[in-house]
Length: 138
View 1 (cartoon, helix red, strand yellow):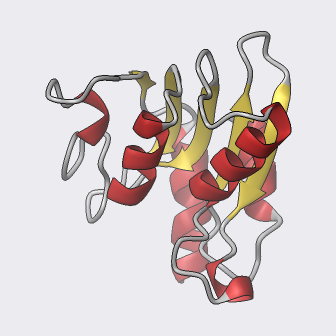
View 2 (tube, rainbow, N blue to C red; view 1 turned 45 degrees about the vertical axis):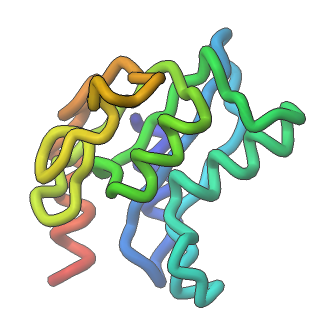
């Protein structure tokens, strides 16, 4: 999570969310912060960028065995994408009560109707992750 926090802190022009994807051996495959403002792309969330870059690196859309670490609870788009990519584990820091889809507003990642459900570890370094978001919006 500290790596994701560092990535988030390096994105001063957008909401500071950092995401890092690790393979089953703990090797970093990709890292990204939000790039919506820089690219004008509404889908350029940190999680989506990390999934795209990691899939390109490994040569497959299936990211089985991987762990996604992100500073903020994923939204529905990002939660859906990580489920479809077959990410094994989601680790996130701060809860997002307005758009969160890993237990706050929705729980896409644990929906029993889906064919893949990652393990979820929530609230990791939550105070640090939440402080970064609060500082941005001040």
